[in-house]
Image (cartoon, rainbow, N blue to C red; front, side, top):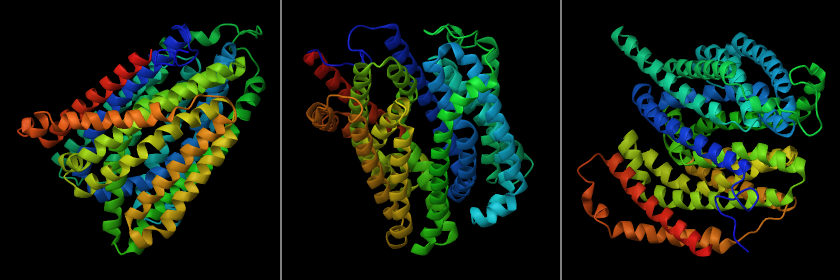
Length: 520
């Protein structure tokens, strides 16, 4: 039997229009995601050298409140729109209007609540009074986030990922340009650059993304959503509000509750980490600096390759919903198998690269030794994070949102336990252990949950052992090459590391391709 390959993730034979759309969407989202992350690195480098590690830590304490608002009024509705429109394409426009109305109403209420209670929230919730001036600015960005989230859900449900992909680039480019301009003006005026620069940058980015997607919706609507479905539904856009609101809310309310609880737990984690670092013996400034280095310098490096798996996860949800609606178990199994294989491939590659070059990257980019240590340590999370992301998206697409909620809460509770009990004794190292344990357990539970719903082949030798061997061979080729002997020593260390990592990645990818051709 011919094995599943990259060109046949959904059905197993031939390049159908559905497969072509999936591959095109994944490549497009991956490309734009990588562009955004490259731009994001330059942005973080700039911010780390203007507001410093302590400022980044303070900003990351403010951001969880935005995440809670986004979970309530945007993220869950976006996912529900994507899932509902994929299964009922003829009702796409009406569902979008309904979801947008609900999301905007909730967003305005939440924005007002945060602005009116900024002092209380900063003092009693965030436990950092310096956050108070930044909360109203962050709150103002919530309606814009709700607007572009709903539009993105509309396009994802129609399996048209181009506009959401390009909106990411527009958001990043405009945010960076505006922040650089504001910083230049403040420097000329002799005004100190504070955390407010990062908060204003966040607001400008959300406004830019909302404006771009709204413009595209007017001129390039996802017309595929207006075609009649198999049941011959009414003319799209003329359905009563209640007819689309009820199924949308039945999908979004569990997700909303799930994401709200997860974001509350995540916010508690963000608030408690600096507090527990102080219990370990650090000062407030040192604790915020360590937290800023960890979250804004090291973690983005490790998450950089997840642009690929995140793109897969976003597109897998509507495809899984569609396959479930059609009762196509073979297609579901093929999606799971593909996701497992490529998540393992990416994770093993990242372990090899970041353990070898983590310290060089941290020193070369941020001039911080702690950043390099964190990058190398976090690399072991990669396979499990990628697996949990793609498997969780498939579970949501199959309608098992309650299962993903339970699994994510379990993983988050494990991390919080390490925050509360390990950090005071072992410092930030205790949190690293907690992240590894939680991601490992989450990935395992996701795979076992899907295994109960659909059969998929599991081949540990080809998914883990052989890629690990290919990684070791690639590293051996690199160490025996002129690059390892000092060919790149005359250029900046960061660029040299990137070139070396690219060389190893090419060797690794070439071995994987050769292996697949021989199997076929």
